[in-house]
Length: 146
Image (cartoon, rainbow, N blue to C red; front, side, top):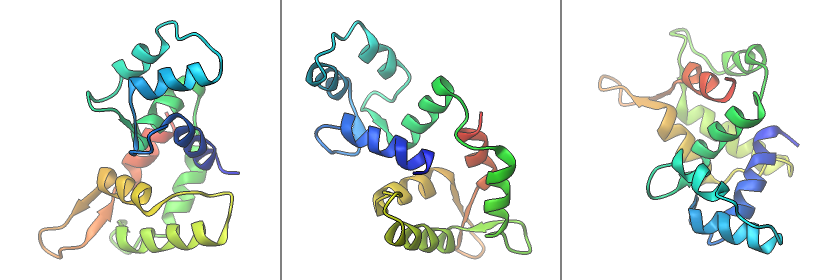
């Protein structure tokens, strides 16, 4: 199982109301259902989130900060190099198609279209000239490999 899929599974368990974001209430309920006492952990985690909750991308970044790097930087660079065109950009539409295809063919990778769209929205930039969206692989790599 990939590290991202592992953290996605954990995110889904904590996101008890399945609204795509973790709230302080979700964390408290998770602690309670595990028979644990929340000793301020929910508030600490939410201090690093937006006021309306922690979406999956933010959760990944937080977990990467707390528990170490997700992937080797060179490995990620090699993966994204396969998607780069002559201008050294990654076409977001092609990347999305590939991620959806991989998700369908590999049961260990459980990324929904919403998850993929959130990542592409966070790390994508639409060209005013061409109308195409380029995926900022370098920014994504910086985020998950720190």
